[in-house]
Every structure is written in C-alpha cells, then in structure tokens.
Image (tube, rainbow, N blue to C red; front, side, top):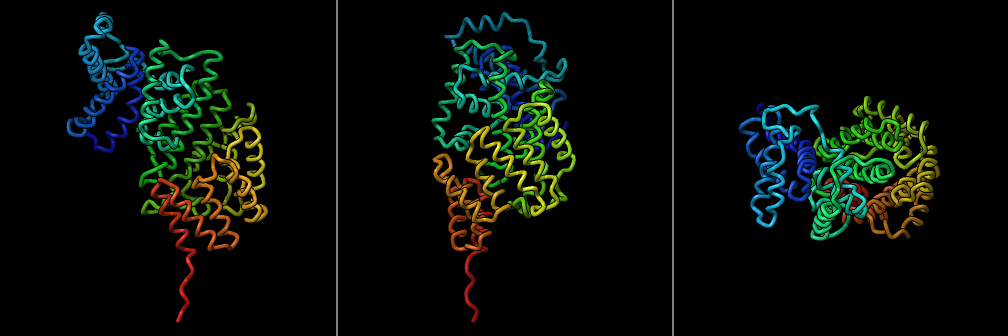
Length: 418
C-alpha cells in the first residue's frame, strides 16, 4: 500500500508503543527493546514511503525490532547466558513476521502504560518514562514541560528503565490496590500527553494533533477496560469536550484564536454530545474528582451560545470545589477569569494578586497573560501591554508568543494626528 511520508509518520507514531510493548512482553529488556524499536522505526520511515506500507505494519515493525534486539544481545559477550535463553525460546506467535496476521490484533500499549507507572519509580520518573515510551515525546520536550535541563531528564529516564529492570517486573496488567495506585498516575500521564498535543509547550505550532489523538485513543481503551471508573470517564469527557474546539482555535495562518473570538459553528458537536453524556453519567454515578469537575467546566463552555451567555457562576462554583478537592494554581487562575466575568475585572485582578504569592506560578507566563487580559478589560491599557509583553517573553510557544505580542501591539498608543 503506497503512502506519503506524513501518513507513514502518523502510522509509526501509533505503532511504536505497540511494538515496544510486544518486545518488552516477550524479552523483558526495556532499554534494549526501546533501542531496537527506534532502529525499526528508522528503517520503516526510510522504506515505507518508497516501497509501500506492508499489509501488516505492526507485524513488520515488531519482527524487524525483534531481530535488531536479538542481534544486540548476541553482540554483547557479557550477556551470553541471556542470548542462550532467548535463542532457546519458542517463536512468539503474537509477534508475526511481515505480512502475517496478529491473533486478535493484540495491542500491548495499555500494559506498557501500567509498566511505566511501576511503584519502584518516583512519580516524576513514572510520568517521564511514559511520555517517552508511550507518548512519543522527545527527551527535550519532556524536559521543557518539567522545567529541567535535558541531560537531567535523560538521566531520569535512563534510571527509570534500569529500576524497572532491577525490580524484575513482569509485563502483565496489575490487579487490586496496585492497579488503583498506578491508574492514578496513568490518568495524569494521559492528561499531560493530551495537553501537550492540544497546546504544544514549544515550537512554531499551537497544536500537535497526533499526540492529542493518541491520548484520546488510549483513554478510550482505558474506558473500555474500566467502564465504571468515574475518573477515567471524566478524563475522556474532558479530552473530547476540549478537543471539540480544535478546528476553531487557529486561523488560516496558524494564528491562535482565543475562546471568546472562536466561530462556534466550527466546534465538533458530535464530540461535545459524547463528552456531555460521559461527564453527566460520571458525576451522577461516581465520587467527584478533578477530571469530572474540569470536564463539567468544559461542557458549560461548549454548550453556551457565546462567551456572554456562558454560565460563569456555575463555572466559578465548580472551580471552587476543584480548589478544595485538588489545590492547583491553574484552577485558581481560571477561577479568576470567571470571577471577572461575574463581578468585573477588578475582582478578578484581586484574586490574581493573592495567587501571585504562590511560588509555583509567580513567574508563569499564563499568570501574566490572564493579568494582561483583565487589565485590558479594566481599561488599563499601558499596564495590560506590559503584562502581555511579559507573558510573551515567558512562553516557549512561538504561536502563543505571536498572539501575545499582537495583543500588546493593539494597545499601543496611536500617534496624534496632524
């Protein structure tokens, strides 16, 4: 099957965690398996655009990566015993050769997710390893997301792989309380992956649609596995309700369009309807959690005909509950906007003054951007310009920077006429 390079790249992004999961399940060598999969991905990216995509791309990728892995093992004399053990194994029928069928089209991605959230790892390492192995983010992207130097993040990911190896973890789905604890981290990781896809933390594109789509795909799989879990349903609803606005978020040249200026007729009504059903059911049948509350806020935005007709009082209430349940400066930042819409911009600015004392957000560009927006609403254009510029300097997203600089330029004083 012929395919252009962009199509091949999208296919490989989806297949990469599946191939890695298959190799880790079979050989139990996380680090070596990832190296082998990267080599197989490079081979596929080179060959498939010219030779065509094989009938069974998953089987092709897994088989090629498996051969690379065996070659690596054989080349290391110090691992001779492991080589003998691998060579003695029967062929794995779940890892077919090119062109063969995979029984039940097995997808090991979710099992890989839970492995990356192994209790032997710190929470930071769990997130970083999952973003690298399953989300497909580069080490540099993960480092930027967590505000640490790239070498530090690379070392953290490497240590995480070695710790999993030392713990002797089996490639199986956890059960009982272990699954409950790991699920919490898995949900957070999926949330981070989606956010990176919906609003890229750096670069010249606002969105990375492939990452957002992968996060939604994985969360759908998780929801099918755990249909009665309110947090899983809430996260899926939040993703769908947020992603529904994707087409209206950028203009013809990729420029950012804020929520209050978006053409709501371009929003995906199918995703909105699905998300509303999910969050309504989750809030009715399960204990309230952060994902259900954020999804409920997203639903209120999506169902409103305009910004002015949005139920800001209900949004303010939901953010208050979220602040008590899971204190987070971003929730407080969003509540300040709701308060400004209810009681005026000065009321929102008063909340921002309190929030600025929180070290987690004091110098964050989003705090400066919201302050600039509320100052503009209040008519204080010189101060608004200053904070738009501060926010622009603080973001590593070129699209956000251009938007913020444009907002600042609009508020520049006009020269007096003749």
